Image (tube, rainbow, N blue to C red; front, top):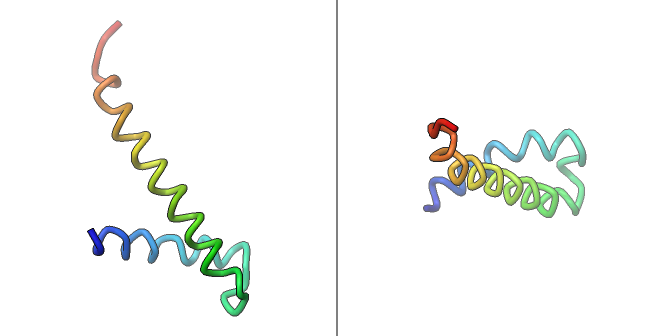
Amino acid sequence: MSLILRLLMFLAAPIAGLFVARDSLNFDIVQTMIVMLLIIAILCVVAIWPHRNKKL
């Protein structure tokens, strides 16, 4: 579990760096918000994936 979280934090750091300077006090907060958005996006894709294969 920690490996997945570290990977997401590694991906979120450059994205957060686009919005906030790395020296800023808010960098960790912005990075955490981006990680939460990534987790939500991944969960949405996983939830919708079974419905994608069904034919109407």
